[in-house]
Image 1 (spheres, rainbow, N blue to C red):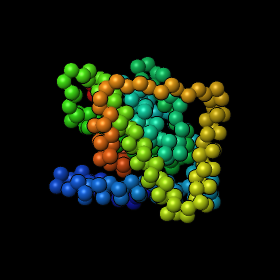
Image 2 (cartoon, rainbow, N blue to C red):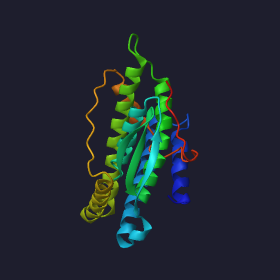
Image 3 (cartoon, one colour):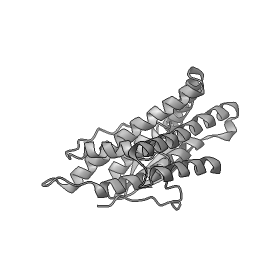
Image 4 (tube, helix red, strand yellow):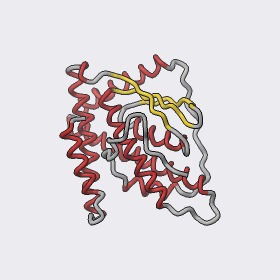
Length: 235
């Protein structure tokens, strides 16, 4: 992503996170940052349709570590799917090695957003009160599930809006072709891939996590994270 675009997004998020900012103002700044991220993805897709060399299909491996590794994986998938990337989960020690596939610009967007959202989720969990008598881990897992679900819905809506604003059906065809090419690449590398069974979560934190997901900044505050490291979510 260009430095000019990053600068705009960072400024918007700094304003959104200012304690003096009203909830309505914060929501407006966050919505604008999300719009910029989505529009960037469409612009890069249209450019690549004319010149494929500018944005090739690629892959990368993201290490997701304990605690709550499976729940962080759920958040990564919730970010990756709306941005037309696919991820394959592989067990690695107490965590996972997530093999991500997508166009270079979309992988960049996933990395930027996931890093930021991990930080925001950690802050949200730290502030969330576990109900008396409930197991903290169960509450936090359900909280993270709610957070991830709302993030996925918000990102999908932003992507659809950006596509519609940029040309409607013709842009949709370009984006659909990109999604197909990513799926074909995954199938080439993992011809016998199986879908994981859905999880059953017992905690009561889903609603609280979903509300935190509605407030989350979708612009990537944490892009300065060192290579190979990611913010964690504590016990």
